Amino acid sequence: MDQASTLRRLVNKDPNAGQARPKQKKKRRVRVISITSGKGGVGKTNVTINLAYALSLLGRRVFILDADLGLANIDVLLNISPPFNIEHVLSGEKSINEIIVEGPANIKILPASSGLSELAELDRDEQVKLFRKLGEIDQTMDYLFVDTGAGIASNVLRFNATADEIMLIATPEPTSMTDAYSVIKILATKYHVRKFNLITNAVESQKEALAVYDRLNKVVYDFLQIKLNYTGFVYKDPMLTKAVRMQKPLLEVYPKSPAGKCFSVLARKLDQNAGMLPILDLDEPQTGFWDRLMHWKRKR
Ligand SMILES: Nc1ncnc2c1ncn2[C@@H]1O[C@H](COP(=O)(O)OP(=O)(O)OP(=O)(O)O)[C@@H](O)[C@H]1O
Ligand SMILES: [Mg+2]
Figure 1 (tube, rainbow, N blue to C red):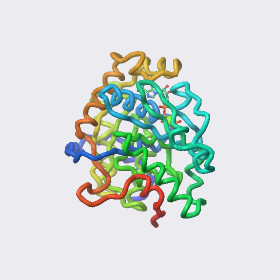
Figure 2 (figure 1 turned 60 degrees about the vertical axis):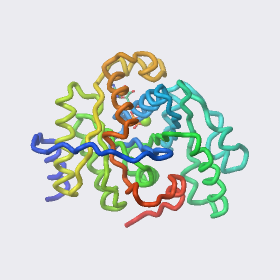
Figure 3 (figure 1 turned 120 degrees about the horizontal axis):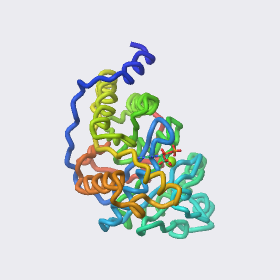
């Protein structure tokens, strides 16, 4: 079957797919979770900010790496303007701690800008120096959320292939699902990633959320033999749009809104190590995220 018929099949309802079972995950020092999507504008930055906010309220130390190297998002949605970014660390002008900006509820923002895309050009000594510094802040965090750009640009794939867990965001829009399939396909076929966690955003009901999961899961299973993990859903909620206009996390201004409650439920689930599949086998000895990012090689 060609790609076009795959995509046609994806947007036609198919209620037959089963649900993935949540799996318990061992406790780790820092969990690096990339938040990604095929299509842009499906809610990645809002999911990132609100999960970070909720986990922070639970007493976790949360960092966000704004890794949308084209269009920085986090600063706009939180109304902060980081004066420095990783480029200043690379140039030696600032230390890592000097570029970190504090957001609401003590969330720490690590502004990346285009600095991280220049990693490939750093010589080995410079890379080692930078990643040693980044490794030091690992000890000060429980979660690192990586808010990536949408799509299959090489830096997006790089963050996804090196994170501990991938959280894919899709909405009920057909193009969001077909583009999500494209991301999964390229990560699976070129980068051997086989664990994906799905959050369906902007849904009218839980039934609609499960239908989105079922349709995507069915096609992913048929063509790639991968079973998607259903992590949860977020309601379509006009209060979220209001919060965006106020440049505040929804959970700060409307915690009891329908989408706000979904974020709180998801954060608790995440923190109990439920509902998420790690990419890597956690029984194997691991290098840290920054090492993996540094030594990342494009696989063909
Ligand atoms: N659950 C929701 N309910 C209502 N509107 C939503 C919801 N989620 C997202 N939106 C709308 O979609 C817009 C885009 O959201 P967001 O910026 O989080 O997406 P994104 O995936 O990060 O976008 P980009 O790809 O441009 O980085 C929001 O400003 C909001 O208006
Ligand atoms: Mg965004």
